[in-house]
Image (cartoon, rainbow, N blue to C red):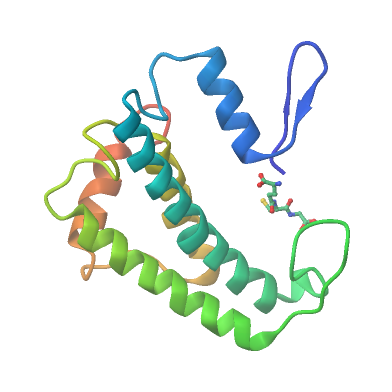
Length: 158
Ligand SMILES: N[C@@H](CCC(=O)N[C@@H](CS)C(=O)NCC(=O)O)C(=O)O
C-alpha cells in the first residue's frame, strides 16, 4: 500500500510516484509548489512529515504490535521486531509533535502560504499517531489550531 490503478491499467505503487503523477495530470490546485523556492520548501517539510512523522509511527507500531510480529519492515522479506525500537519510535513521534507545534506558531500552513502536500502528509501522520497512543494535547496549541483549520476542508475532515 498504497496503490493507484490508472485507466490504462498501469499501477503506481509508491506514494511518491502517485503524488508526482497526480500533480502532473491535475496541476490545479498545485500541491507541490509553483516557484522553485516553494517547491523546495514543500519538499523539505513533506520529507520531514514522512521521515520524522510517518516512519517514526511505523517504527513504534511495527516493532511493538503483536499483529506485526516478524513484520518489522514492509516488503517481501520478514524481519523480527526489536522492542527497543518501539519505545524509540514513540519518543520520535512525540518529538515530531513538538517540532510541528513550534513550527506552526504564527503560521497557517506547514510550508509556504498555501495548502500543500506537506499539510496532507502531516495530517495523516498526526491522525495516524493514535495507533501508537500519541495525540495532540493542550501542550500543542498551534498544532491543534492548524489541525482544526485544515479539517474544515472537505477533502480532509475533522
Ligand atoms: N513503497 C511504498 C511503501 C509504503 C509502505 O511502507 N506501506 C506499508 C504500510 S502503509 C505496507 O505496505 N505494509 C504492508 C506490509 O508490511 O506487508 C511507498 O513509499 O508508498
